[in-house]
Image (cartoon, rainbow, N blue to C red; front, side, top):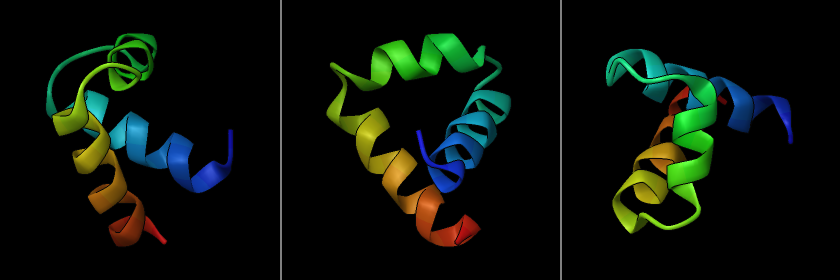
Length: 45
């Protein structure tokens, strides 16, 4: 996984009080989480 995506997932996990693995797992099925991660990637980059 690329660094920008890792940072976005970590940020999202921190903001939602979840673990990195929880978010990474839920990202596979949730369009809302996917969109949020994509937005965060643009903020982090």
